[in-house]
Image 1 (cartoon, rainbow, N blue to C red):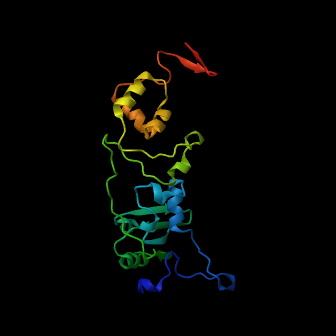
Image 2 (cartoon, rainbow, N blue to C red):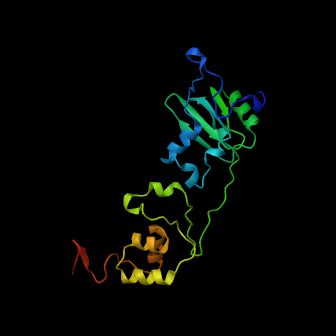
Length: 215
């Protein structure tokens, strides 16, 4: 295989020239497949797994051809199409990996751009209560409509004793308490569970109906 500089990043090879010799990608991009796998376009901002900048090379393999040896890398993902298989990887050595893939019978290949980096796992950031800190970013766009007004991400420093007291009183639900203390609803639920608090909603068995309190 020639030097990587001879390949245009994120472009499938061998070249396919359609009518008027314009380049037409014969396969979808690995980046689009990775985003679709998470059902969000903002995958690179909210995931602790490799983002699209970790895709350093990709190949298209015929169905029925063994490819397990191509996944022995720091990270790889396999997408099964009805007619072919796409393998994307975060490899240390793009040339070596593509040479092995071509020798194994791949139909097409591509390399990532110069800013791609080999994936390296790092532990998530935890707060003082051993809860994962939610990173700021487009994740808020994926919240339900009643959560969209909360601009705060999960914070590390909050009054846990005051939160537990509010949980015991039970006048505010877990979602609203999360807004108040800058936490996610899941974190509030865990804190309530650890404190042995099971009840939700208004205290003492009361429930609200059309703005009125009913015992």
